[in-house]
Image (cartoon, rainbow over the protein chains, first blue to last red):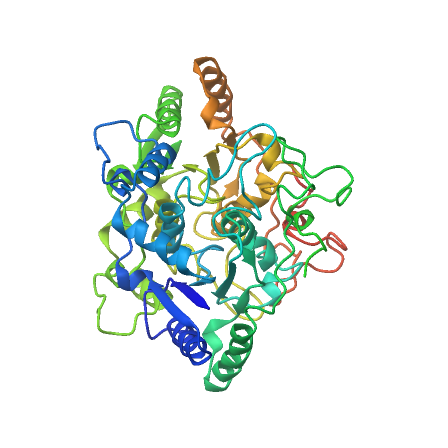
Length: 262
Length: 262
């Protein structure tokens, strides 16, 4: 399989850097082909702006999604954006690897999403009408591919538990797993999470690698999170609310997972 | 009062730009002093890296939080970071204004948080032990100040409702309102949200400004979201889970709001 790792940590010798190196080695040993987008090493430009289109006119009024649509349709996107889209087309599996900074991804990775996820590529795909609100949430350009997060955090697991003060990690990751990955069609595997990164000695690092290695071996076996498909019959269109008979009375993120949380 | 607006849209003539201009005018007319950090206009550097400390050594192993702690403590932070911290100290109210991109803030604003929220300034404040896990979530450097989000999105309100496909907007904003604003001590007002931005004509724009104007007039009157305080007795320390008798049986984000969702 072809596997793309998008890696967002400024220090190659960090825990994240080591886990990335371990993942590459493990996947290559298993016969996969791996590409790494090491965003800091690439000097990835984080902020979406008018220069993202080769035809961008700094004096014209800049409409981000219209500019993205035109540049994508006409093949006039900035080369760094087009290159990352090619990697996504090539990949069977996408892994996003990052430290949790302020309960989300580092800016450089958010900027990879903001810029690479073009109109016509990641959104604005398929018919948009009052009876079909696009091919998204389970359909779209990434359908048939899988994705997984590898996330590290300094906090304790209990702080991210069902009643932990930071909020449950699954819910903190919902905007990414559901909104960024399920949206353009990826099947999303449960995340691989390392807590309490300040306390990783050699023994614990070996255990983390063993667990991560297993997850990487099982990339194609692990059941994905059962996010509902927008066009699978569970939602009213165009209101895009769950039908009354689907998860009746449930509200919030968990209602969008078919069999309850994994 | 002193009001800081951090604004993150690449086009001054956009809806976001117009709302920012309206807000400045309204607040100044009411006698407030306003500063705007217009991140695109400032060319704000989004990606946290070794150059954020004036003493940063590109050859040494870079530990983001340790580097932040040292630079903050020794007064050797990059000048752009120190300047934004000064504005935060000066402000009585912080407004973050942005379009919702991929269910979160644009990368440039995330990079403002990642870099300005230094160790010793926004986190790592107060005693950290097994009996007091820092001054945070209701205490900290921003205690006594208020904050509010102004957010625009292309989607419909129903898509962000209690059973909407994107997830409830309050929950999507929890990592920001709770994790970024409540964390260093801000009292967080309910967000001001504009849905369906593709359909804003002059009449609707006038209505939006009327509602926003009222919210700005009421900045000091509107009751904040009743996020629980970490050190207010509701949490076990150091597990930082809600005590059994607090919101018994509740899980997830809503359990951290004292009187249920506003």
